[in-house]
Length: 94
Length: 94
Image (cartoon, rainbow over all chains, first blue to last red; front, top):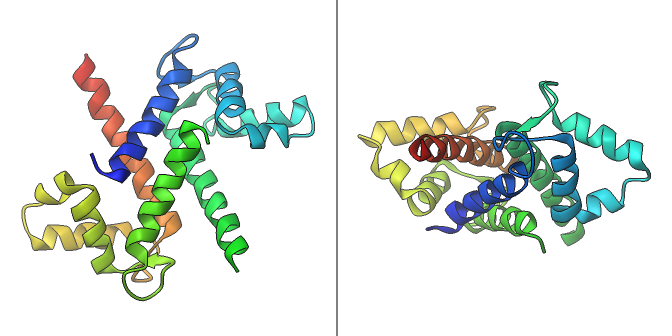
């Protein structure tokens, strides 16, 4: 597999690892999203000032408001975070 | 780094590896997009029936029509391809 294909599989695997914890294995419940963020993006969660900030973040990731985060929504978040991450990394090189 | 963070860095690295070939290192020219797809997603290109199909694909990835594919456009494509890839993988499990 190529580097890009490996990264795609890693994102797929990350989603499925947390989505299968409870309920529908094809979507992330609120608690699964929280656990995923705590484990995979600890800086994001540790930076959150309080519980409400985390709840608001989790709610924000559920774009269609159906109460869960599906794979498309997860990928949109990863894409957005990667763009933010690149923006920070590019600024620090200047 | 976590698995998700590693995959984000790999996508960043993939984009920058090809974007620096010519012109602006912060965007992919048409030829850089073609090379990236040929190297990183060979099945996608080998499946294209002719040169025009590849040109149309490259043009389609330039969402804002400014003649290049920037990082946000690249990430949108990777997210969409990963969703398609998951859809195929999920169907084949049934």
